[in-house]
Image 1 (cartoon, rainbow, N blue to C red):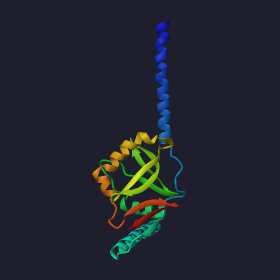
Image 2: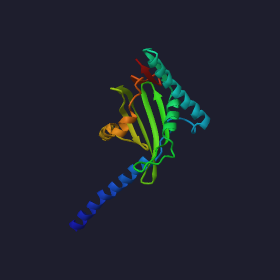
Image 3: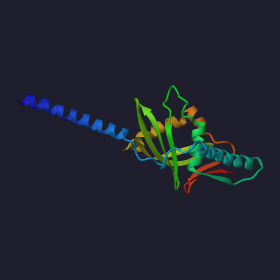
Image 4: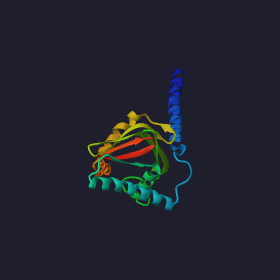
Length: 197
């Protein structure tokens, strides 16, 4: 009799672990609230915002060429989202990674918050992150302060090493290289600020 009781007691933790595992998966698959209200912008609005983004970069480039210093431009989150959409069309399928869908960026005070949907094991999963953007030695830097998969918060310590490895990968690092006419990047008062010094 004690042996049967002992066997049953070993089965209980497995069931508890299975239930906890299913709950975690359920939370990860549950979609959080969108960062931006409403649906995706019309193609004309996206094109206008992407054009505005490029024009502002052009202002910095022109300032550099004419010898001006201390010129800065302020870029809205709508302009950044449009530039991302133009640079990374969703139709492009990479063999080594799932395409990112529904990319959203919001600037709040001195933080950037981002959200995107990707496919993991055949299911759409929403990833939300927050952090501080800066620049160092001609490259954009990002220090995460919050990370979430679905509705499940993930401790920064669990993603920090993987994120650092990803950001130092040569292909990713090349995408983070700043144009020579941009010397400083920061988020301030809910806008992305690029400076040419």
